Image 1 (cartoon, rainbow, N blue to C red):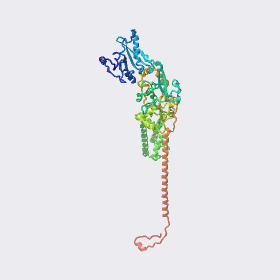
Image 2 (cartoon, rainbow, N blue to C red; image 1 turned 30 degrees about the vertical axis):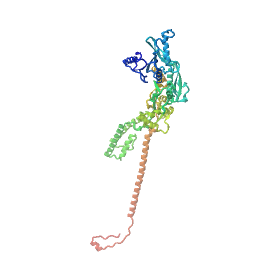
Image 3 (cartoon, one colour; image 1 turned 90 degrees about the vertical axis):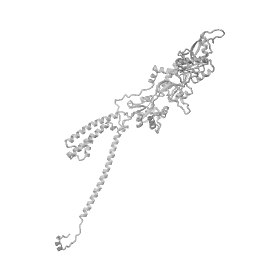
Image 4 (tube, rainbow, N blue to C red; image 1 turned 60 degrees about the vertical axis):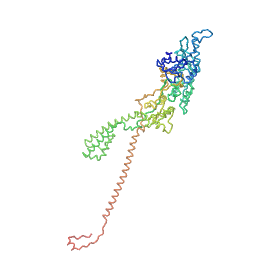
Length: 615
């Protein structure tokens, strides 16, 4: 007995033995570091053991409590005996039965009392019978199912992996009933991008059905199940809560609220959900006409042409070149050289000719580099959108695959970037942002649209509909870190460890990888990069040029209008001056009437005044 429980850390002794025997037994267990209690171990304590004597009163009540609490599990090792069955209890009518028959009868007698309890293949229930004097034989007992009879077997025989053809109920999900054609839908490869994950879990379940020898009763639902306000679950989780099914035949997310009604087995496949989008052209995010040169180069060019303009102006004043009449003409010839245009003005001095020649050569180099870089920018997809913040600030619209867990994740997330994206791009949209994968991928192909989708469905649709050149600008970013899918069983199920081992075996031998490679498409690769595909220049690329042209035309029109107003005002002023000058001239040339003036000659002579003529 000590050897049987030597690896346990907690021990429950439930017997009606004399106190002295109990004390001795407790001292022995304490001596090897095992804690001892007189009550059933609580659920969740690993490496615990229970020693129970069915000859004691009220043991059936204790076993019923253990069955309801599902304490017959892989974590608790049970040793059940009946001290009332002595070695010679098999004798009757003075005919001594052989030891083997005695042992069998005692075993059947004890196991029959355990028929009604929840002792399934995951349990570690053992019975001890005295087949020889002071020698206990330990046998393991279990039931493949609650409706099956109790099986007594040798310890460690491994035959508990044979469920003897019992029927187990399971549930799976079909979100697109219009594409469902019975169980043949799961067996074939038709429409692999529709209800992908229920389909790829179906082969795993069928393998377990053959390995464990049970019959599968599969129920199809259209809802994974979410918690209601009254603490009940809908859909598949609701069936597991009511124990209407034994396990899920499709992978589920491990959520905190779901752990109340289910237990996980083993991880199966990784479900990835991401935002797929085509990088928009740089012209929609930046002015491509300022991108060819860095800020330092632009500043250097401006300073160079400014120095050249000042130098020509200085030379103009120094040499008094008569053909250059104003600084504006110097600016005009410098701008003409920058734009690869000639000028009607030609310098006369040798120094100015050399300067103009150097301006033209330098402008040619700048112009060539600028033009080549513009062409490269137009041919290269942008990489400006790399984070959720970039996507939120971008002109791209955002759509979401119409799945329940997407709506739940958006409402439950605490990530600031995700909340900002949701409130800016999804919640504030006038139309519904949730749509089917085909609609979303079709919008992604048109451009300026980002779509949150399960990447397996998205990759399939992109491979079928996109041109090779359209795949080159495809980008993605993860919005929610998705947990790994697991097959689940009902809470405290007696098949959890059995299913876990079988699923892990399928992963280790490569069955899961083969199924994933067959069903889950890879990300479409860009095979036309560097090929002969050309990018058409649209209005968005030329928009800055049109803006400059429009601004120049408006400025020219405004200046022209001011010139007209100015010239008319000058003309009026000149006309007014001319009219005023004509009036003065006519007034000065008018004939004055003659009159006779008389002087006293004598008096005039005395005063030295000459005699005036008649006017």
